[in-house]
Image (cartoon, rainbow over all chains, first blue to last red; front, side):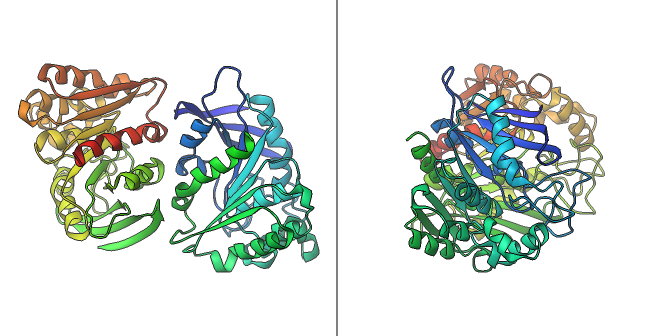
Length: 278
Length: 278
């Protein structure tokens, strides 16, 4: 692992690292915020998954999360949104290929050899974080848009792994919206039955009651993608049917930008703290 | 004026505007944050001046200032750092020309026809803000690095205009450091006597006691530019001689980045609020 940057931030340490990912078969960069701690204390971890076109730095520089993470004593881990490098397949569209890994394991070529963000975020990166940093194994997960989809499927597919999950403007039902249909066709092939394993609404409807974890979703009602790509009401209806502990908040006037995330990230961190330390 | 962007942010409005500047003889972009207010209330204004290579968006996206400005009821105005456009003179260096206006009025060619950031920030932009937005005429000023220099000279050259001034890692003594000497030589010519009117240490030593205003400076001690370009101790010594109300805080471990600014911007906003509303 190579340390690319380190900055003192709210008495903690904001770092950026590069490492060779076995799962993704390329070099990857991630950011981490380590809060100030008492000697020997091991903070729990919140994984943050970013949206289309982002890398590890968008949330790191724009969300203002470090202030609250420092106060609460939570480490923040921000992975990139896709494999990277010259030999990694890409597409001219912003919503496919690099910057658009959709947190799944691709089965189709030319994607399958690198695009395994699900295994990377679920297994390889957490193991690396556990091995290299003084953090506890308690963790929660959150994300924005494509990363909100990522956070929800990670939580739903891995009962017991996360204490809580939250999302900002998540793509909850990718099998039914253009972003998801395009990505899933390329990454997973034309058999839409195989897509269901990566759709949080489908996963939620198939979930067991004992696996439910506290879930918070914020959605701006001035979000340009609300009607066409996001549709949180579909997830809310599935949660109602399953008696899943979801809080869905519609935030009047807010859009899809990091200004929206910055405005409500404090609530999300306090929500996760309640369960990480509970 | 043309509205380029608007985002809801902490219940206020984050906007980006383009307008034609008469003073700078080019189109200029600025950002403004308007806090939520009671009907008819006019918030005071904090002008923020950014550093080398920045534009109006660095502070806007990275500092996390809107949260506190919304709470306190302060409008934030973020101008660009130089004139812009294809017919504006530039230089290959990051510390001269576009992105490096140094908040002065250039007298030398090819700079003199556009580089009048002092007049722009002091007169044209505040008049525009007063005319176009529901804000009060109470104002304070702050900035980072080159913008910290800008904030200090604005305050020192214009007694009574600002209630208070603050800076992060300011270039306090540009006539004695490489950044300032390079810029002043190009913008103002070789006569170093003329540079004194744009040097906050020289201005402070020539100031009148009755013009003093509360001044806060934060400086990280891990700032790579501390010894070579910044030297806040020179300003502190001048303040001591003049009995100027300066608080200089050396922040252990902090560098020159926006992570440093984000960590302490709350203190600066609360400091200014005390005087803006005092």
